[in-house]
Image 1 (cartoon, rainbow, N blue to C red):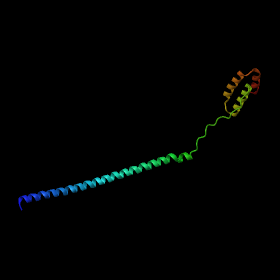
Image 2 (tube, rainbow, N blue to C red):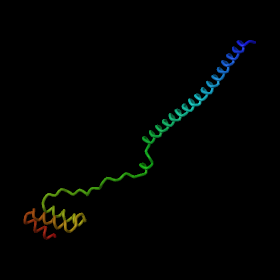
Image 3 (tube, rainbow, N blue to C red):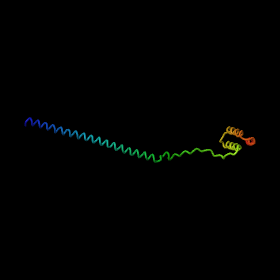
Image 4 (cartoon, helix red, strand yellow):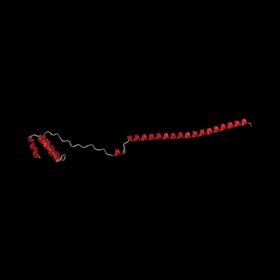
Length: 134
């Protein structure tokens, strides 16, 4: 065999080794990329499932009553004082004032103050009646 043949066989052998090495490298790279792609796919699937579950729980929580509000009684509205019938005259003011004092709605000082006001506004004949009932 001549030098040319040996050189040719060495060149062909080098090309074959190069192709085999490149094929091996390509196989390894493809495998790594496949693993990465699979991991990314699983991550996206998990994120999608998590988003769907979170949205479902949020919708259910929004539309279903919570246990706290179902068990807690609602506060009652404020209770107003009983309505008093309309008064026709100033003497009715004195009677109503006396009733409020007896019922404990006003104290003695407020009763005296209001009685003085009613006495100032009422005619003389009614003043005597109010003072007698005092």
